[in-house]
Image 1 (tube, rainbow, N blue to C red):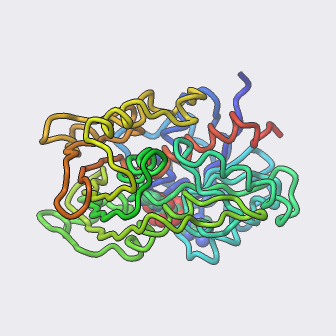
Image 2: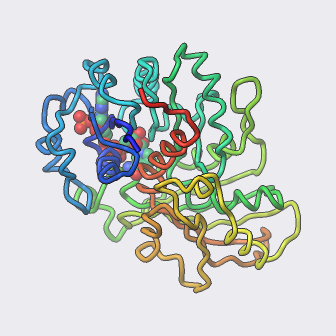
Image 3: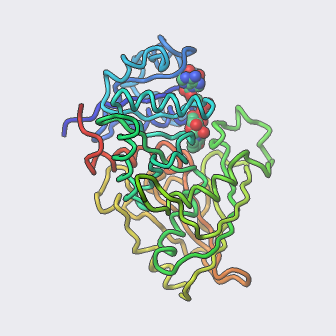
Amino acid sequence: MKKYKVGVVGCTGMVGQRFITLMENHPWFQLTAIAASARSAGKTYEAAVSKRWKMDTPIPEEAKNLVIFDIDAQLDAFVSEIDFTFCAVDMDKEATRTLEERIAQKECPVVSNNSAHRFTPDVPMVVPEINPEHIKVIEYQKQRLGTQRGFIAVKSNCSLQSYVPALHPLREKFGVNKALVCTYQAISGAGKNFETWPEMMDNVIPYIGGEEEKSEQEPMKMWGTIENGVIVPATTPNITAQCLRVPVSNGHMAAVFVSLDQKTSVDEIKALWQNYKGRAQELDLPSAPKQFLHYFEDPSYPQTRLQRDLEGGMAISLGRLRSDSQYDYKFVGLSHNTLRGAAGGSVLLAEFLVAEGYIPYK
Ligand SMILES: NC(=O)c1ccc[n+]([C@@H]2O[C@H](COP(=O)([O-])OP(=O)(O)OC[C@H]3O[C@@H](n4cnc5c(N)ncnc54)[C@H](OP(=O)(O)O)[C@@H]3O)[C@@H](O)[C@H]2O)c1
């Protein structure tokens, strides 16, 4: 298969570095052009990131000598080299929205890790195992942008990946009327490690700005329906969330309480999770886990260090499902926040868009 030429905007950052490592040996995608701010522009990738490389594996050879574009000043040159781009930048929301639309209007599809467009009604926010049908809204978005092949698709916030995948089959089969979620989130979610954030050692911070709103509202868009060219958010279930920062390098955990519309049993829920397959598994996408939801019977599982890397960090680990005295059931979920929750989720989304014919070769 001829490989797609891929760009990464925000290539020097935490998520950008993860994109660069995920492109190494990717069967469909070839890293071709990289971009960041004027601060990094003109440098080779190696020169720009060698002192701030945060990945466990070395800088990929294919990236080392690529020269970084200034995405603002050299947008045309950047998009001329690629079929589509990933985007993960630390800019304010309005600037990010404008940048992503500028790229899309140059007829370059953008698969974004940023939150800026998550609530733009004609921008799909897709986890291929949960709401694959939302990519149909892209046709309407292209009409608004006046493009033939350029569009924006986004992935959801990292915190959601530990509980929405487990709630989704329950919602489909039994109906979910309410859920209470407490998330325990890794420091890499803030773009940090213990060297750059030593205050997090032996510490918990009970506040992550904006995270609880995202955790409560983004699932509603993902469970929404396309009506008149936009995604209309679902109105149920009612989700309430508390999000805490914990001293963990990678891996977000969620403690979840859920009430269902119809009665079921612990065994039926476990079987439902075990047998659940989404479009990513049906299409056998390169980054898709073979088994989306893994249930562990050992009551001390899932554990962050033991399960976060399951199936390349793309599977969801679940455990401790039992009845609850106030809600119907409670359980624990775990996902890798920078793989499934960030760059890995975006790569899977790009593979899905390619497989469904939304990203043609240029
Ligand atoms: N970390 C996570 O786990 C995670 C998870 C989900 C979503 N996200 C989201 O992903 C995005 C990136 O996060 P991050 O943790 O990777 O941030 P980061 O480590 O701070 O990296 C930010 C990147 O943005 C670039 N940038 C900053 N200002 C720019 C500008 N004016 N023009 C072009 N590029 C600019 C930086 O380039 P320079 O080096 O040239 O400054 C750098 O490449 C954010 O929207 C974040 O909310 C992060």
